[in-house]
Amino acid sequence: MTGLPADIVIEPVWLVEATYAPDGAETRVPFRAEHVRRVAERIAEGVYVEVGAYLDVSTSVLIVRADSEAAALELVRDDVYLRNGVWVELRARPFGRVRQAS
Image 1: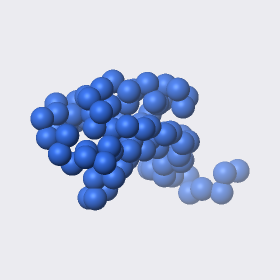
Image 2: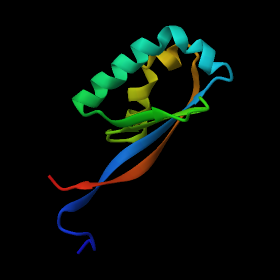
Image 3: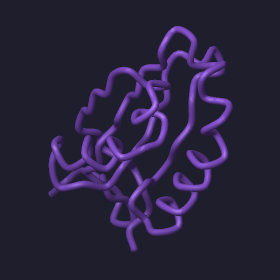
């Protein structure tokens, strides 16, 4: 018995935090369209669950479906922001996402 209602599940996903460089608000400008386009593609594919950033441009948060921490980080490592120094650090933690059962 899980103690959850029958129509609710906890989906194991990864919460990835991507820290912006101190000048990230400025340096992201030429890469932003490509970044947002790729994020939207991965959401459509079901790889990313949710993506956004704090409005102070300090950290982006990506909730991703992956089998391991290494796999979650690898999904985000190919982002144009990380490749161009807009993001300078990645961290991933396991996260339990509450959702309706399929």
